[in-house]
Length: 600
Image 1 (cartoon, rainbow, N blue to C red):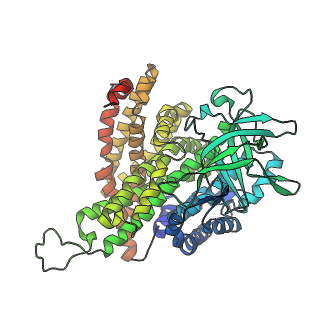
Image 2 (cartoon, rainbow, N blue to C red; image 1 turned 135 degrees about the horizontal axis):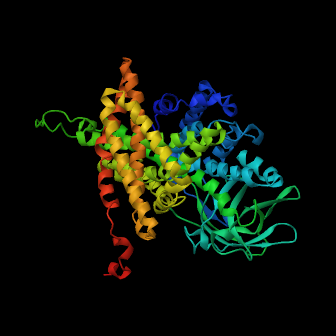
Image 3 (cartoon, one colour; image 1 turned 90 degrees about the vertical axis):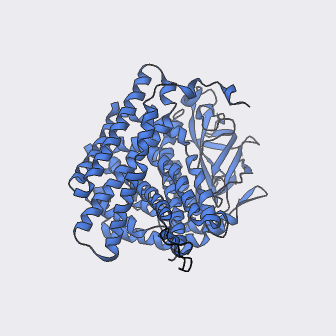
């Protein structure tokens, strides 16, 4: 088996057979993009990844960024891929023609970005961050800001970032202290420090543009007093670029994801770091949530992509590594067999595939909702927007958390070799760990889901989700071999509803801390139901294809889909029963436990 990091066949199965993405061409905004156009772009992404990104996957991990006299030096591929992303239109792919984009559907862009990320996560991060920043500028910036900053960003010449976190605040954005002092010239003077800024400084571009949260002098305390600013490393002035009193104070040395630097920034040491207000004062966090929510979907996609690379690396090893004999054979004279013949190795591979392809299906489903929420008919827009809001924390967290377990299973298949640098599993394992932290930890996503999203729009978002799931269940009931799985999913959905009702009841009684104490368990349970829904949806499509009498490699593909679906329903979905048992209990163990109980 040749080295591989994604399945082209699976991507086209999801795009065309499960989601019918080409139907989006019926909408005016996407009328230029038929099935042939979608496939052409996906094929181009695959070619770029195979020829440019994947060959440098391990090298970028080994040749880490360096801080040299105040300048971060990165692997040359960063500049090469940023240039390619600009010239090929990848940064602005989903932007409208008027904005300099290609106007392609988000669901297609998700498929293409998945390919880039699976080939080389670190390289893919540079244009990905720039895209989110450029989109935020287009959404809320003045015409002057848009004309100044967006063109070089989408050309891949300037990097874009999101600068939120501060040393003393961490995830608590209400405690931000970076200040912005108005000046008579119309700009603001920025002072303070930011940490953990991905691609926050590097020599792969000519400039770095930070979209930075800060507090205007005299603004209200908490999140209500946060504003958003454009703060470039080099400020455009007089037809050139001048230093903007913004410096890299440190470079963090990371467990994984090493090819993209994460830096600490210091602003205003000389009192002349200039920032320009984006939108209205004190509305910064609401604006930034656009980029944050996009980034949360992107982080889920990154996790699924890393897990995909790990799956194919461990599959290759399992097919080629000969060790041991079938358990029913005790004859030492028989030759050893490929380890993929051993049932436990098949179980580990099925687990990996179930996580990778289930996560990707959910992420592409959510991306389709993103397309419909903006460009669909009026009824479609509202419903799709509700579903997108509800499922964003799930689509971020399930791949992030389960990707860790999935990649660990891949490492387990390699045994001792998996723990060495001779094979890529150890890098995949390191690269994976950040995703449960990036863009809001799993705990934050859980609080968002249970504390806010399930009650969103008067509970209509949750009702819409249940309707989507039940629609798939009805389709499965018409396929004899899948009818039982529809029943299983219905039971899991009922457990989720009971758990939701129980937790909302506690909130109604004012016992909010107790209701949210096990929010992560609720998020895990929701993720199981959502991914089971996606697997049943894939199962219906695969079973219908098999029923047509397809033979050869295509038959094996569909049968593999059905086998993986069965694995998920028999091995993963039953975990929701144990989660429900805890979620329906009424004690407050973690709320009431005194901190001193943790001491020696």
